[in-house]
Amino acid sequence: MWKATRSVEMIYGYLQRLYAKRAQLEAQLELYEARSCFGEEEVSDGTDVDLRDRIDEISSEIEALEHSHNT
Image 1 (cartoon, rainbow, N blue to C red):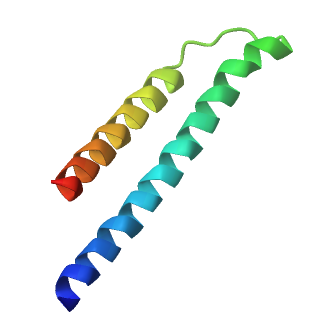
Image 2 (cartoon, helix red, strand yellow; image 1 turned 90 degrees about the horizontal axis):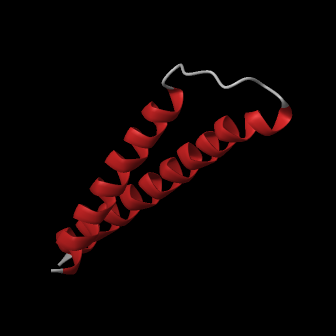
Image 3 (cartoon, one colour; image 1 turned 120 degrees about the horizontal axis):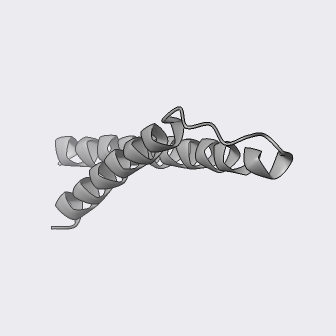
């Protein structure tokens, strides 16, 4: 019983870190996209693509963990 509880706590903690990281990356993406509102020229350096890819990866990992935990 203790191992199962500890495992759930570990998964919950890991999910919380993933949620926080995803929120951080989403905020970075918003700032990156908002710079055009401040007159900065659009730069195609791939940062937005990298951020979106990482957000997608984390979202998939969150979904998989939530699905495996709920089944």
